[in-house]
Image 1 (cartoon, rainbow, N blue to C red):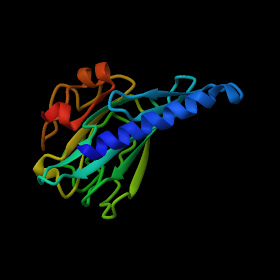
Image 2 (image 1 turned 45 degrees about the vertical axis):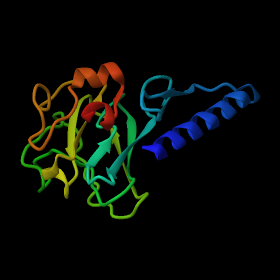
Image 3 (image 1 turned 60 degrees about the vertical axis):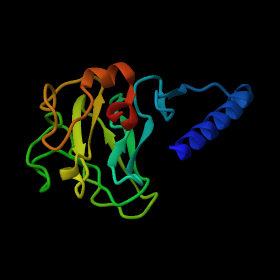
Image 4 (image 1 turned 30 degrees about the vertical axis):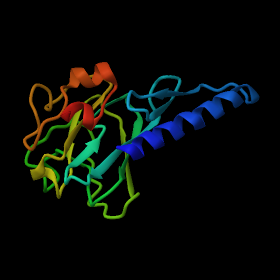
Length: 188
């Protein structure tokens, strides 16, 4: 928990320093929008195309989770799944993937599967193009409830109105309203 506070403070300090230099560069259509969890989503002209990060965590108390556990992005946003600790995957609930027994992503959406990332700091990226609600899980920790949800543009699809079969996630409306729901907010 202390590490997050230090990283968040460092991020704010870096942002403040860059803000001071903002007048020294040419104007741009690119904007950075902070999410409620302190991460930044960069978008061009407000139409998606930015990036944001979801951490995959094994905590000291033996909890396994994604943070944020609920995230709202615009279509065209690339999400980087970063292995902060332990060994994890970011895997869509899609019947085309052996580990998934059901499909909980929008019709026509690309399924994603990072496979297991065992090195701390390892990343996997997926660009979300199709509007709707995506539920996903960690292959080795699915049975322990390591699940999360991303809403792209607006809620919809087979994940709406129910929880994933392996755990609970924030309701899509809450995610859309807040932009991001941290694991601590949701479970605490």
